Length: 86
Image (cartoon, rainbow, N blue to C red; front, side, top):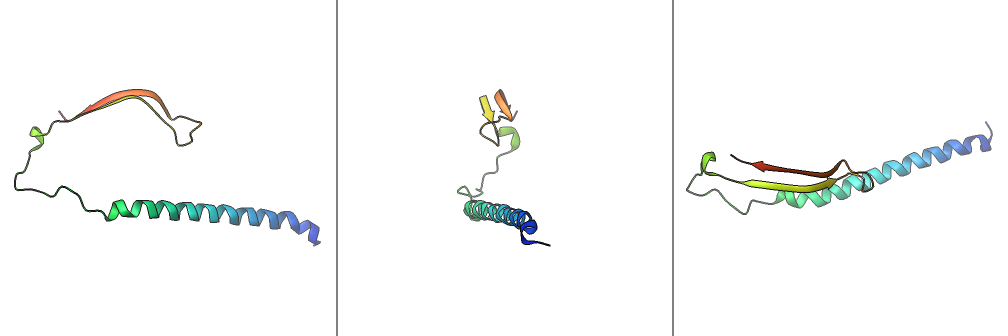
């Protein structure tokens, strides 16, 4: 096999290696960012008074929420809803 026939294969292999390296570094950076949150202790410790579920009241409002994994493509667009515990 001649060298010039192998050149595209070598370029494809190098491209695949670059992709694996990029994915590895992205995963490593993500792990470094999340580790402090996983190692953190809660600021509120359990106290002597236990609150039953019926006494806990909360409501969250989400208005005109837009979201997308890719900034150019929204998965949700202008979605509004509320969540309540009762």
